[in-house]
Amino acid sequence: MADRLPVSVRVNGATYTREVEPRDLLVYFLREELGLTGTHVGCDTSQCGACTVLIDKRPVKSCTMFAVQADGRQLTTIEGLATDGKLTPLQEAFWNEHGLQCGFCTPGFIVTATALLESNPRPSEAQIRKGLEGNLCRCTGYTNIVKAVQVASAAMATSAAAPAAATAGRA
Image 1: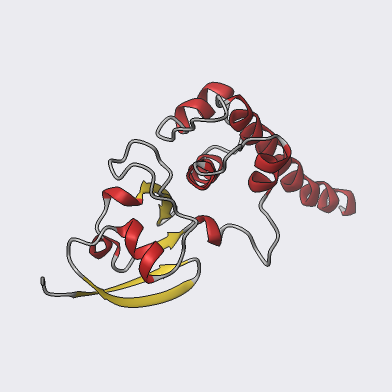
Image 2: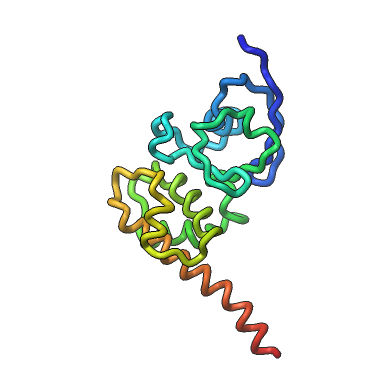
């Protein structure tokens, strides 16, 4: 048995310290050590994107990374996106726009799209498709996934504009 190494990560706002084997993949660390099973294992070859998490706010396929490589980093999984049980506008849009069917790929798409909208709040359809191209879905045909990202983008822009408009009205 290989020597175990300490890993300390901040996941969804909580700090975890565990000892892992150097060969342990991050996806299995999240699922088996931390019980965060929303991060799915789809292919183990980095082709499908079902295991995507945010590491320091950037999307990473967690099956391509060893747990020891995440030491000292900040991670966000699908479980960490909602706040106090309230879905994000993106999660609501996936639900309302039927951007999911079986749901297996959905966590990876939502995590990836979260990073996309953070870096580009008003992406074009082409930019959305490019931004999501590392994620595969075998059910939806992608049209409703793209639509969900567009709807979420518009909703987020509207909610961001509302406080500015309220402040301007008081001036």
